[in-house]
Image (cartoon, rainbow, N blue to C red; front, top):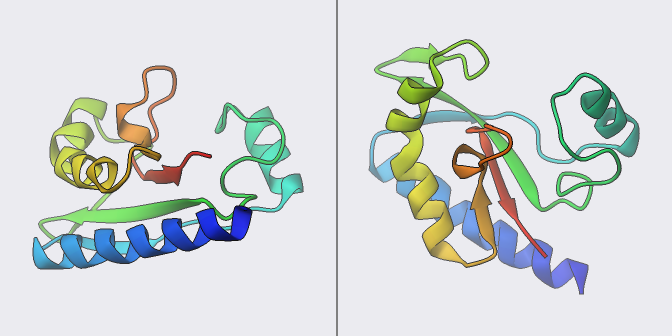
Length: 120
């Protein structure tokens, strides 16, 4: 049932946030829920590989913004190797919480390091 998956996702988000706070990461929320119309716009712009309702539309994804040493980490402009180096511990923790959790920084076809998702 979708609501059960959403609940498990929400619990893992709380654990991830607490872990990041305890390890000194500064973060804010980016996008969580996304309407289908916005998903289509992102797909057309090449900002998403999913054309129709994706994990955000099902409330099973969270995008975060990060700061490293109080400097905003612009995920779209920074060197991907630098981003991955700095955010890999966060992604590893997220994926350790559940085999259904996936971090966009580990994807082979699309690098999306601010994205944390629960696959169904």
